[in-house]
Image (cartoon, rainbow, N blue to C red):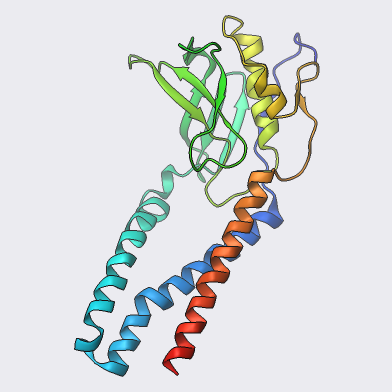
Length: 234
């Protein structure tokens, strides 16, 4: 890649098939959960009486509130803050919502040297998936320095070019922040060719497929549990 040419702006692209599948699975899982834990106790009260179902109803509805309240708060009440698009340009990483408004950003000018051996490195946080996440040190405006893990994922969307976004961000660091050191291990993990700053692999990442597989398994377990419960009642 010619470093004298303008820095290329790259935007996240969605894998339509995987995203639709994920939406379907989440919808089925949500409906099954409501039938089992919300409407199920109502049916139990109708069939067996309030006193007989009191304990089970309190447990089911209490569990439902613990799950539904944060879900509604995150996906409905605060939906304007949800990122729907990721852009890597000459300023850094910018996250946009559905109205094309900036919800978050990580600027090259905000990056600071870290206390590690390298300034840009990877970590394996619990629950992050198979592929490690990139970690950087930031100082935004007058705030103190803070460690930030860069996430190239979007809520309920499977990103097709996630590794390409990482590659372009790292290329921007190599261009605009030559004072920072990047851990060479990152390039091997994300299959990035530092001569062309392109990604050698294609398709959905292993972590993406594992996420879809996990959703399938959970959906199957919930549906199976609902079926067994209905059979026992009969």
